[in-house]
Image 1: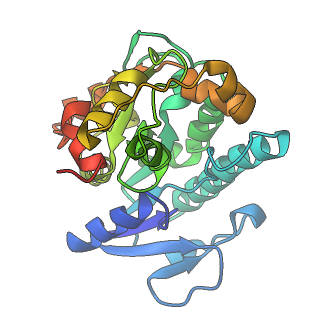
Image 2 (image 1 turned 180 degrees about the horizontal axis):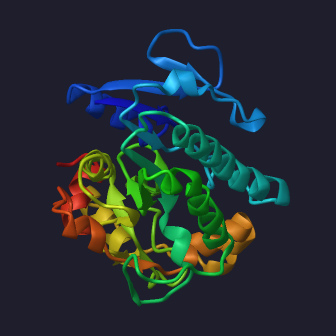
Length: 296
């Protein structure tokens, strides 16, 4: 299979490309500079430039592109960058592949579990309505940006990824140094549910969805756990305490609007993913903790 990947250098994209290549697929990366080899395709989403001729023969497209939402304070300018980095890339890809003949059979489009907003302990499958937070609004417009591909008959799956846990990078990359030093603990009350997935399962799920006949939103998550449960499982795997709670007011002061994603509660379930036949390597936080902490 010939697969085009946007956002191929990030936490998810890097191991995903390696996995796809190991499986015998040819991967071509979209890059925002002049292409340096036949496995690269130059594009400029901000200028609306992507030559459809470069995509001829593509069987599948995976779009993971987007500014890291946790990469800095959510100022008005950064909120705009978060939104446009997603909608511009998605719209351009969607509109371009819709014109191809033959067209790719599938577009796997990154999305996020922030789609549901603050929902407490409610179990959230893919049929649930979107929330009203900033990130839910981003997801609403992000997923709508695939309209051209869907109208052209391309199967589109929206990858509503949870918090991706890995030994390096992502949310755990910020938590683990504190826990190893014995100065970590729950965030806020710790009772908020975090919907998460390990990096290996994220990569396996995306690869699985290349062929599984799934379309529409797909929650890429394992069994949700509270922030306190996740913190305790990681601390236990490291044989460290986790008693130093970080008060909610301090998080709001430091993180600003992003604090709603840390303190908010989203208890998503992987209904569509499980129904498609996918099984997790790390279905719960007890099985994930040794991998995340490097103790497996």
